[in-house]
Structure formats: structure tokens, C-alpha cells
Amino acid sequence: MASISDKASPISKLETYIPGFDFIAGGGLPEGRSTLVSGTSGSAKTVLATQFLAEGIAKAEESGVFVTFEETPKDIRRNMSGFGWDIQEWETMGKWAFVDISPTAGDRTIITGDYDLGGLLVRIEHAASKVNAKRVVIDSIGSIFSQVNDSAIVRSELLRVATMLKEIGVTSLITAERTEEYGDVARYGVEEFVADNVIILRNNMEQEKRRRTIEILKFRGTYHQKGEYPFTILPNKGIIIIPLSAMELQQKSSTVRITSGNVELDKMCGGGFFRDSIILASGATGNGKTLMATEFIAGGVSNGERCLLLAFEESREQLFRNASGWGFDYRQMEKEGKLKVVCEYPETAGLEDHLIKIRNEIDEFKPNRLVVDSLSALERISSIKGFREFVIGLTSFIKHGEIAGLFTATTPNLMGGTSITETHISTITDSIILLRYVEMLGEMRRGLTVLKMRGSMHDKDIREYTIDGTGMHIGKPFRNVTGIISGSPAYIANSEIERISSLFENEKV
Amino acid sequence: MNKILLKLYITGQTPKSERAIANIRRICERDAQEKYELVIIDILEQPELAEEAKILATPTLTKELPPPLSRVIGDLADIDKVLLGLDMETVTRTTGKEV
Image (cartoon, rainbow over all chains, first blue to last red):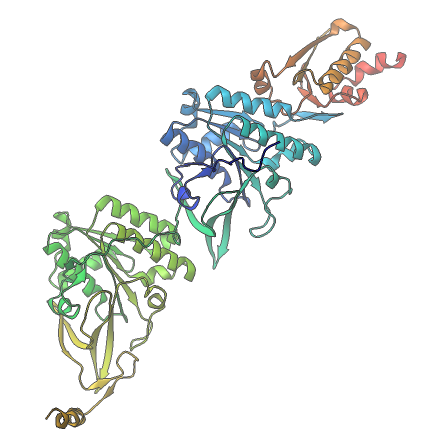
């Protein structure tokens, strides 16, 4: 009899090397145990399972066994080659073995009398010892019912399989089909009993957009992140999980100032932006956001910094023309390798894909400054939650790289008001600059204010600015106008201002 | 006359295995014996043969010749069902009456 004082050894984790997974799983899959992966049809169960083996072979020299109940090995080899996984090659190298339980067409099978699934057990064990497997995948376990339909036998035999897997010390992923995105864990109700751990893959429809998520439902006796995490599937890579809300706020904070590209704006910000800060420039259409971004880039380039411009609203040609209109030569900057302009329609991909693409661009180009023009364009293609997660993912990534980021956001109203983008991400940004139209005595003028500047003093005035062929010129504060930001400016006569100032003069004396 | 090639896959000397062996021997003996070739395969000893024949359950009886390939899963308790499964009804009809 085991005594109570027997110390249980803590469960160790096996790194899967699936991007993002080990983070949400608190280090990886529980080692030496079985984990059930359940999902509806088309939720990427087979991809995840295959990737588990593929990454093991590629990154850790850990061999794997793939037990297939549905597709033939031939189909799997072909379907998975698009992810860059050469299964055939691994098979010849003795790192990968198939156990083929897929139904054979035209096979006649009759059942009479007592039986067990000894064949399955023996074959898995044999294959595992043949390649010296550390990882085993069974895909998909529910399909066993198409060949053997006695659920009592299936249940007891699956338990034997699970016990055997534990005994030979492999870490396994077992996939199972479910019928609803939010409902029973798996279709037949027996699948979840074979595994200590359950992962759910979802492929939800959200505002006409498909959104794939992964959730670790339970890891018996060990830690994991909770909730759904979005993931995407890319050719030549496979599944990439984006651990957005799990990102840690542990970026260093720099006190180094960099120029905004505009001398006056630098002064308003107390000497420039911080080197690793996120700046949001918000304003109505046509009031100088792209110009501010252009000056920000030019300011960086003139200091020898590298700048990456991600444009989602205008084409390359338009951007280059606009910049030259203000006296900046993007073509020359690109030639010198100081600038990279990436233009894309927001609609070409989902937000998750955009995020990964942006990360790749950043990894490749290694910029000091990043401009996204505009963030609002990306908001169109996603749900509010997805957009917020995207911004968090992006900001935390660029902060890690000590990159200064300038994002632009478009307000829906010409005068005053805030944009939806702003309300959702204002807490994530370090600085917010508002650009507003000011209607005064039958004239449209422009006003700018630094609303927020984390960690620094800044100018609280609303300053007037003008735009001409040489860029943005920030002038005097609007002293005789109120209500600019609220969108209903009111003109106060000069005499009134003098009267108010004079009220205090007596006290000074 | 064509030979009938039968293979019985078992996992060790379990009661199920013993029953299946006894049952298939009985079936074979009812007919002229030389017509059958019965191979008993213990997949614990030869797991690669189980992989080759795609054996899922044990015991499994396969009829490899003449084609088509057919399988009977279980301890072969019901002889008529076994014969049906092996596509050998004709054989029973000629000899079955005497049993």
C-alpha cells in the first residue's frame, strides 16, 4: 500500500516547438502522458498533430509514430508536404513511422464472437520501438467506431492503449471529432476518458470572418494559460499560435529621446518621443496624419535609423508622390536601405496573418522605427476583440525590439470626437497626439495637441498648425477658442481675454 | 482445385486465442483438409506481419486466397457466420448436411 507521505514527482513538460504553444501550455505538453485534441471538422486537428511530430523531429531529434484511423499514409504525406514537412524522408531516416488503421475500400469484415484491439496495441508498440519514438499521435480516435462499433470494447481498449502509451513513456496527442464549437468535448463521449489533458481547437464564424482558436481545457495537475488563443495556419510553417493576452508587460522603458521629425512637436513633447514608445496620432481624414508619419520617418532616416512603413490605405505610388510633395525622397531612402515601404490591402488576409507578416517584416528588416498608416484600416476587417488583441500583440512585439512605433487612427467626424480605434487602444499607447479641424469665423484651421505623454512633461496647449510644401508648421496656441476637442469651437473676443487676465493683475500687485 | 489460404492473427495464448484456434480447426476439419492452408500468427512475436495485414482487432481471421480478401474478427464462435464472412457458403452446402 502506498503511504500518504509518498512524494509525487511534479509533472515535467515536453516542449512541442509549435510556435506559441509552449507558452500557453506553460512549457509544453505534460511529458509521458496523453493529451486529447478535440475539434470540429476542419479545425486543423491533423495539422496540429502532424506538426507535433514534425517539430519534434526537426527541432529536437525526437522520433514519432503517426497512427492514422482516417486518412491513408499516402494522403497524409501529400497533404502535409505543403507545410514543408517531408514525411517520406523522415520515414527513410527511421524517424517517423505510420501505423495505418485507415479503412481499406472493398474490404469485407464480419464480426463474430469475442475480440479485443490487440492488433492496434501491438502495432503501436512495435512502431514506437522500431523508431525509438518519443512522440505518438493517434488521428482520429472516433473513427475507430467506423470499424468496430462496440462502445464497451472500444472504451476498455482505448484505456489499454493509453496505459500502454504511458508505460512505454511516450508523450501522445490523440485527436477526436466534436460536432459543436461549444458543447460536449467529443462526439462519442468515450474519448475524453483516455486522456489526462484536453485541448480544444475551434474554427468560429465571427462577423463573417473565420477565427481559429486553441484552448487548453485541462492539464491534470499542472499549470497552463486559460482561455482561447487565436492561431493561424501558414504554408511552409503550419500552425502559429498568437499568445496575445498572455504577453508579459516586462519591456524595458527607455529614457532616450528620439526626434519626431518636427522641431516644434519635439518641444511640445518635452524633447521628443521616447525611443521605445508607441505613439498614436489621431485625426480626421486629410488633416496631416500621413504627413506626421512621413516627418517621423524622415527624422529617423536623417539620424541614420531604419524605418519600416506599413501602409494599409494608400498605394506605393501615392505614398511616394505625397512624400515628394512635402520634400522627402522615399525612393532615395529606400535605395540607402534606411526605409522599407510595405503596402497591403487590409482585406488580403485575416488580422492574425497580418500580425505574423508584420513580425516577419520586422525580424527581417530590423527597423528602429515602425509606422502603421492607418490602424483604422485594419480595424475594418476584424471584430473589436480581435482588433484589440492584434494591437496588444503588435505593441508588445515592437516594444521587445525597442522599436518606436507611430500608429495613425482616423476619426469618423471632421470636428472633434474620438475614433473607435482610439478608444480601444488608448491605454496601450504611451503617447497620443490629436489632430483636429477648427472651424473659426468661416475658416477651417488645424489644431494639434499632445493629449498624453507617458513619463514626461508636455505642452498642454492646443496649437495651431499649417501644412505647406515643406511640411507641417506648428504655430501659436489657440488662445481665443474653446471647445476644439469636443468639436464645437467657440470664438472668444480678444477683449474678453484681456478682461479675464486683468482680473488677476490686481492680486499680483 | 484452388487452395484456400487462411491466416489467423492472435495475441499470445489467451482464452480468446485458444477458442479461435479451436473453432477454425473445426471448420477446416469438416472439409477435405488439404484444401486449406491455415497459418496461425502470433503478432506478439511477429508484429511486422500485423502491420502488413493491417490488423486492428484480435483474433482476426483473413482469407487471402482465393480473392477477394475477407476478414472475420472475433473468436469465431458462430461457424455459419464465419463461413459467410469467408465467402465459403458453397463449401458448406456440399458438406454441411452431414454435420
